[in-house]
Length: 173
Image (cartoon, rainbow, N blue to C red; front, side, top):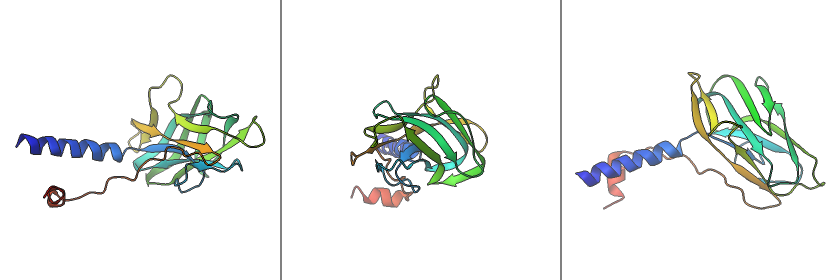
């Protein structure tokens, strides 16, 4: 019985962690490519949201040879602050799902072809990237990294699929 309880507890921990909100830098608006083209078109995308009205983060460009400015928030969204230190984006309504385009980043100050990686990190003086839930509570989210020049970034995995207890038991027969 103790083993069954431990198995169930570990499954719940994995399921909760896998479904956590993730805010990352991507080369496309769908949040599928962590490889950035040297064209300078970069998107901040909110993934795996169970319900969100905003986010707070910074974009760390220390591994690249460029400066980053948050530009063009999605229509209806409001952004305040600086992408390099602390930016808050209000979405204007409660949104659920994956592929919520928060806005675009403008890259400048480096060589004609950016190199290195861009990473969504906690805003200065905050321990975590923040998702603002539909009830306006601040909840920790994960941040993602994307890289230029074909270097693989760290894209999040897909969320855990729900299953019945019978399906879980069948895995161990």
